[in-house]
Length: 259
Ligand SMILES: [Zn+2]
Image (tube, rainbow, N blue to C red; front, top):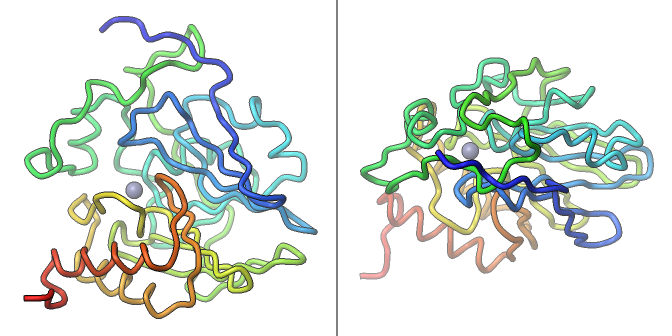
């Protein structure tokens, strides 16, 4: 395998507004390129998901850790919890295997096997999920995701209080058993992890449950969501959310489409 170029800085910050920043890793293959969301609160900050873990968030984004934020791990896939071990407060659903995650490799075929990704359905995977490496010594083929013990567990309905903003925990199983999303009622904002994003949703990995997933998506349609901040790709609004959910339910045969 030819040597990957070194990219520094590794992370890119997209400022959404005064109190919301998206952190992305541009040199991760698009299949695994996820979002971390940094929400600033009066009393504490919240980070939703922790990237791929190939570069140190604490070293490269010191301002993110200035007030030791709470990390919420939406689910135990490697593109969402890579740097979780760098956070002192890391919260996840009790039913999610963050202490023993399934997929831990950046090598395409190995990760597909570990996660149960069906290549016949989802197409070929790249040899390696990176297009650059964070530093000279980084060995992409040897890299393994670091497992972590959550410092606390979250359940459906738990409210996270940042002082002047509150988020409600939603347990939305389907993609994984303990998938979480966070809903901020005052803003109509949903931080959705991999429950919903504007691309093919993965319902057939190890631990996925299509019937539970369908119920989770139906539940989203009953909430007053104005903007979705997903685990992958850009934010979208309520109309697009409804289209994505209804198309997915139709594809699963969960609702009758127009004949
Ligand atoms: Zn996932």
